[in-house]
Image 1 (cartoon, chains in turn orange, red):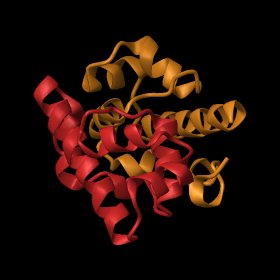
Image 2: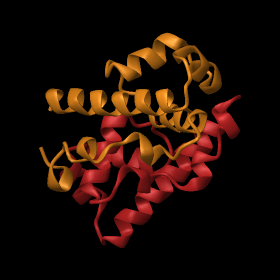
Image 3: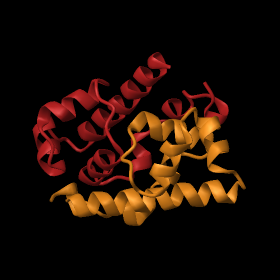
Image 4: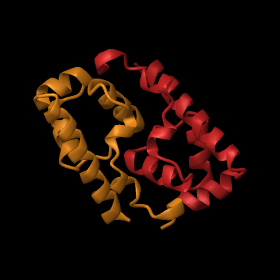
Amino acid sequence: MQQRQEAARKLVGARVRHLRHRRGWSIDHLADRAGFHSTYISGIERGRRNPSMWSLIRLAAALECRVGNLFPPEAEALPGIGGNF
Amino acid sequence: MQQRQEAARKLVGARVRHLRHRRGWSIDHLADRAGFHSTYISGIERGRRNPSMWSLIRLAAALECRVGNLFPPEAEALPGIGGNF
């Protein structure tokens, strides 16, 4: 369970970094847009954070994408069918 | 900010309840599937909780939908353009 959560955090973090790079933005710029500290963005990108729903909404708005775009299918598949553990 | 977070929690909670009802499931059944306590599901549905990324992934897997389906566009629009506050 802990390992799967870690894997999910890393996949979402890599996706956030990819989207940020595609826009040519620094971590500081994204942090400014989202109203977060840059260390928080950096922590998300490195898979060290498990951001809340509201943080994800703010992050997606700052990246001008849908929240769903932050979640690669591999991350969503981690809990297994039916979400059971 | 606090008000917008509250509005987002309520919109996502209503969406979770809608998806659960559409499947004809009780709160207990969804809780079992996701591996959560039923009071946690109930709190999410009533907009009292700000679930983490990993909880959202587990909830979507239990509901057999994408994480993005839990977020209505009105909830995603709450931070404003660019995510600025």
